[in-house]
Length: 362
Ligand code: SAM
Ligand code: DTB
Ligand code: SF4
Image (tube, rainbow, N blue to C red; front, side, top):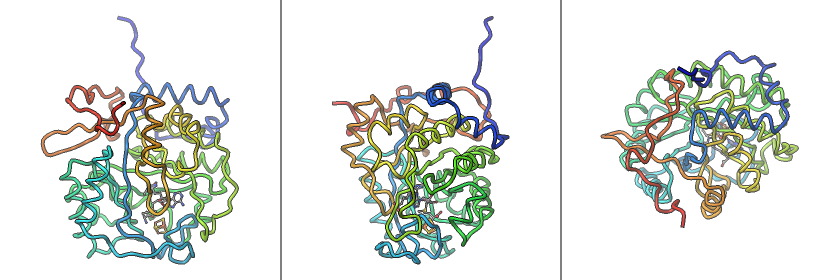
């Protein structure tokens, strides 16, 4: 029997020096390695598509230096109350019709109050009933809150580590990094999938970008989704005016994330609106396989859907289909809690799924 070489199992013991060594590889070598890892675990022509909705905007008591929703900065974002469930469901229907497979509800909270949970739970169950994957990002959660959201049908919880431990205090002072790690453990313990990444382009060093990825990859389980946000500079926030990150350094960050977290969906997240199509194509080559789709992120812009559809068409990319089984819906991806090192073998075609009409090639 010829020897079969399997992809190396995911690691959780990255040293900072090793991550810095990945960043320092010649650009083509780094992209080639990331591309190999991507192909070992995914179909590189498929991209997972999520749509965001801010269900409670602005007025946040926290001091995150990048955020237009922090009450203390004067960014022109108006504070709103929590949206009604019917209005959220209407937006989710539109997102599904436009081709999204996951719907992410965001709230500008430090953490939800217990009295908010039933209302958010109702939104989650109704969005889930539409046949969408559900995701929420509501700030810090207690164990009980995480359990209640899971029971309502929440598939993913987004909570970012944002930046390297030694740079964290320059960006946020109203909550500790440990608070974030605690929330992530409550989410995992409740049986939900984690969506956890960070932001680059905040004036951090390469070593600090490496430190963010090191922290993410050394979590007890790799996050199922890893959003890599490029800072969206909003006037009024302390980080407005920060020197822009070299676009190739952004691509290097995506590539290193792909190599270090081989089974995770690496999301090319905030910041796409000001990226060229060519830069986004490089990010897909570097192993990004997820995007936020729809004209708005939470409060800032995202590329028009027409532009994204045209980009998918030009690059021969297709949205990752959902596999629907009785009572559950999940995207055709690997579960990171499993130790399986093989690529998924159930394709959308096997399951009789097709791309939503709006994504089909003309
Ligand atoms: N309030 C909740 C929290 O902080 O966890 C949920 C919403 S918060 C807006 C979600 C994430 O969006 C942040 O952790 C941050 O990584 C990202 N984000 C916020 N403002 C951003 C900006 N201007 N540019 C890039 N990413 C941003
Ligand atoms: C994530 O990592 N990025 C998204 C999502 N998770 C919630 C949010 C980006 C927000 C960008 C700024 C805004 O639109 O307010
Ligand atoms: Fe509030 Fe979240 Fe913005 Fe921080 S990132 S200010 S917690 S909404």
